[in-house]
Every structure is written in structure tokens, then in C-alpha cells.
Image 1 (cartoon, one colour):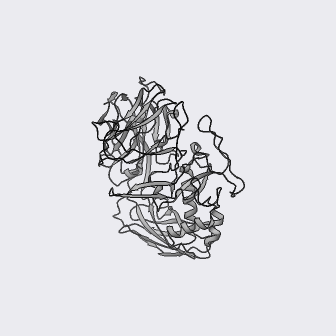
Image 2 (cartoon, rainbow, N blue to C red):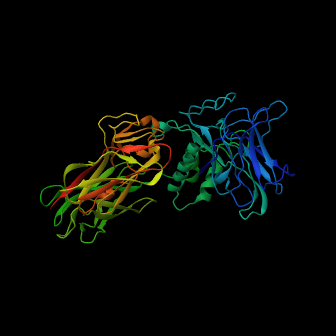
Image 3 (cartoon, rainbow, N blue to C red):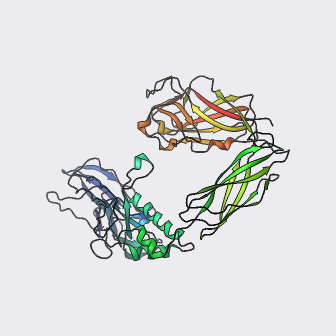
Length: 541
């Protein structure tokens, strides 16, 4: 599924026949003010070896666009004013043609999706624009629905094959329309507008069709969409809504899709071991509870779990267990016994392969479970104890911050913190962990004494300043990649890019850990003041 685009239909197709100048082998794009002064230009060479696209930012409204051909044969050009409007001016008539759709959404096999609001409409995008239409929620879409005003229109005109030979064609795009303006679990996207929202909505409907009809493909889905889409005005395929708007209920009824069970595993937990605790160690046997869940929307009358260890030396009994019946959404716990040999490396996890069979089209389902071993000890903190270190500006080598760890066993879990005693957005502050006027310039990695490296963050935080009392934790609810300038100074718990659980190992945590901080852009400087690692190691068995 591809989003059809969120720009009004304002392209102009131009054919230039005669050169207007000499001395260059390309077409140039100019912006002119009302007096004819050039206020912007794009002069990239276009001699046939580059992508045939030129663009420039519009610094102010009421500008004129001019394409000048200096040399070469006459070709077709598309001039698009993205999120802008053409309008008449004295002596100039605004002209636009259909066909704003571009790029991958115009590929013949793609499902090009336009947007229609599920509930509230959007405000006008520019002065003079009409207000956006509203949707039917809590009702359902009907043939009277109006597409979003910003949905890019078709058709898509193409003039060449990939090899450069001429092959003029017109493609009837978009294909279909789906809902936008729905809610998501992210506050910044609730509601979520645009064809960027409509395309995944259509993809979700396609997934329902395929899950209810396993083995079918894209042609089956396209035919089902075409047979059930609600044709919007004007009648038949049209340049703004395609074949019409998609409704999941109509499509599923048409394809004969039925509710299907989908049984999978939710994880494995050690509940008791032969020495009386709940930590599986070398030479011990432990009772392990495996959670089995029917995540589908159809009931299961019978399910079976086959479980085996893929870690040499570890043994699982029994190898097969009956789960029984499961209603949609219901979970059950299956007890098994896992035994470790006496020479097992303490802290090395056990990998378990699970095979679930059940009555339903989606059976069987396979999964891999990871079972931790070893008994974790207390968490200890190890801090960088050196002086403040400037971060080289725009230098990809960055700066290394050494953190010494002693008296620990193998790593069970770990978090990293950028510390500080008082948080502010003052880039000259010495009381924050990292002072930097533009945190988005920064990236950081953490490397263990054994050589394992994890990328902690990279180019996040937008234009905000300073990191202070930040904890990078795999269990954090929010990824640091989602941080914006309003979050500055950056504090609290954040999820890193690479899981810090990757440091879990039978190797000792002792030695020098390296936090490398890199400033990827010139113009803003920073200093590292304070950072720590917080390590929970495993007790000796």
C-alpha cells in the first residue's frame, strides 16, 4: 500500500520546444518576485545522468515560477508547487493540470491510496481554501463521503521506460480511498491525518483479507477491493478517490473471510528450581511456565505445544503438552521442566523452540523463547570520574569517556545514565551531564570490556539543549528517537536504539567501558560532564 500523497493537484505539464538561451546543457528553475527579480534558483545540471528532479524552497508568497531551457531537445516537464496554490496575477493566468501523484505510488502494481476523514475534518491548509470534509464516525462510510481536500489527484502521466526510451502512458491513479483522521496510541498522532494514515489503514484491511484467506495474494486483494469499494462522486474511477472508499466489513463479507484463531507464546518464566529459589543455575532443574495465548479473533477447540531446547546440554520435558481450548484473547500457562548440565556457563540464556498446532487456517505457529539463567545480585553504579571533556565539533571520531568497573561478575542487566546535579537548557551549564546547544547533532555508543558495542542514541532531540539525569533503559516506555525540542532539557527514562540486554553475557563486567559521544554537525559545541553505568551482575552459583 502506498499513500497517494498529501498535496493538492497543482502540477503543470509543460513542453518546451525552442531554446531560450545558450551556454548550458540543462533546464533551470527560477523564482521571481512581482517585479521580475530572481529571488531563488535551482541550477543543477540535467544532462541525462542525474535524477531528473530540481527543487527549491519558496521563501515567501506571491512569487512567479519560471523554467528556462538553455539547451538540449524539447522534453516534458512537471512543475509542482507543493502545498501551494497557483492563482491569477496581472498579466498572468494561473494554470494547472491533473496528475499530482508521483513516485512509487504511481507504479502500476502499487495500491495508491487516497484519504477520506473518519471523523473530524482538517482546517483549511491555506487562506482561501475550503474547510476539510468530515467523516461518519460513529457511523460507517457511505457513497456520499467526500475525500480530503489535500489528497493528491491523478492520473499519472509517464513518458519513458527505465532505459530512457519513450513510452508515453497514462496510469489511472489513485486506486482506492481509505480512512484517515483516526486515533493511534501515540499522543502526537491522535488523530492521525493524511494519506500517510490512509495507506496503513488500507494495508490493515488487506491483512484481514489475507489472514481470513491464507495463501491468497495481491491480485486477490485488489479484486476484492475493486468489487466492494463504495464508488464516490463522480461515478466510476475518478482522479481523486480512485475506485472508491474501502470498508472492511464489506470486503471481508465478500471474500468469505472468517474469524481465525492465532495461537502464539507470550514468554517463559522460571517459577521454582531444585535449590528452592526461582533462578535456574548450572546443574539445576527448574519448573518453567510457558504462556500460550490465542491472539486471534476465533476460538480454538484444541491446541498443542511442542517445546525443545536449541541450546546444547539443556533438556526440556515433556517435549509435547496439550493446551486444550482457548477462546479469542484467552491465555493459558503450560508447565515444563528445564534441566541444565553442571558445566553450563552461568548467565548464558537457554533458547527454546516452540511449535504450536491448533485447529485453524493459520496453524502451525513457531516461536523462539529465551530463558535467563543465573541469580542476579544487587545493582551497582560506576561513574566517570574524570574532568569535563569537550566534544569535538563536527568530528566523526568523537570523544571517549572511560568508565571503570571492578568487583563484578557476568552482566545480567545494565542501564546507562547521563547524569547531572541540576538540569537546565543553558548550554554553558556545568551541572548537566552533557551540555550541548543542539542535542540533535549528537550520537553515542557504549562498548563493554569484551568488545560488544551498542548504539545508545543517534541524531535525536531536535533543536533542544542539554541532557541531564537521563537514563537509557530497555524497559523505558518511550524511545529517545522520538524526543523533540519541547522535551529539553532531556531527563527521565528513555529506550536506547540498540537493546542494552545485548551486554548480558557470561563474560565478566570488569574493566573499562567506553561511552563514545560524537558531534555530527558543525556550528554547535558541547561538553560531557557526567555519565554512569548501572550494572546488575550474576552471583556465582
